[in-house]
Image 1: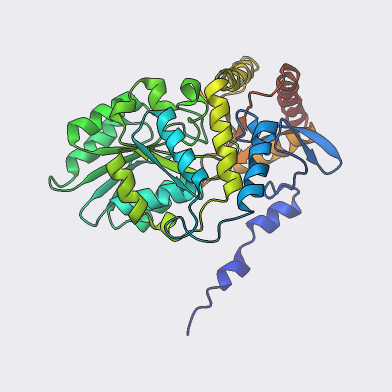
Image 2: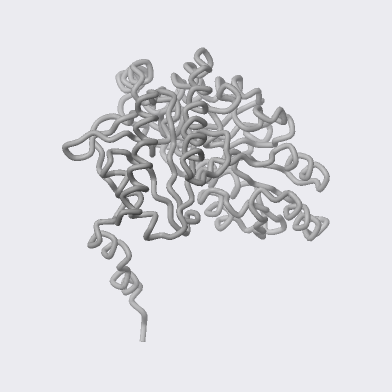
Length: 391
């Protein structure tokens, strides 16, 4: 008897159970702009869940650039860049990205997720081995599933474990190591100098997905620049959907490799080009980072203040240097109750549950959060704790 693959949909009840308990945290509908406050129903809440680290999605210069691109090019490009979707904006952004990050070339993709899919899959063959950090982003996991290479996972930020696995690789295998620069769920940085040395010793190439480091660390130049090891990183993948106030992604590296990817990365070749408005918004945001690097430090300082004060108040936090503050919570149900209670006190944070990561509250802070908003957020955490103790 054949199996109806839709049966598993009928048996899925986790979302329904959470909805019935009033603890469903997903697809919350916010009105208005992505800013330090968000409109939720009939009330405003402090937004501590956005990755809009520099607050540039509401910057009039970014919005004007997007409008001008629509006026010039229309709302979309209806073909791939390989064929008929390329514009001067795409190539201008690539040149300015390469100049800013000090690489020979860059290649823009429609999304950050597609960037990792296209780059990793295009580079690997069935004779190769790809080694990834266990807490790497889902797009990296997806890319390795598409790749014919053998995948090995090493313990989070554990260079010794990586070297143990590298020693097990066949001597004639190509080896690719892929890590996040800043881990999105914890806000912790990878030990990049040690990773660069390990890859050098074992003849492995290194890709850093710097989605949460670009536009923030080292005046916006990201994790490799922060550690002073940019020359030792072979490729950097980035997204525009965090600090660069748009949607899209790019890979940065040598001209030879970028040209190969331009003609072999399937997620770019077989996708419509990124819309001109999103390209123009990212380009303008990049230019703002160049001339206003203080925004990057302000986002870091705001998060550092909240992380320090939460620790003083008795909340455990994951150490980090990024605008992400991660508060471990222990249990899934407790995480959702804490999230809902904070929301009742008009503060929105992201509840994180497995398989994304161990249960935690993930808060993120923008350069544009005011001191009053930061202090009100801290007060809401205290009120949340007191309410749960009293319950």
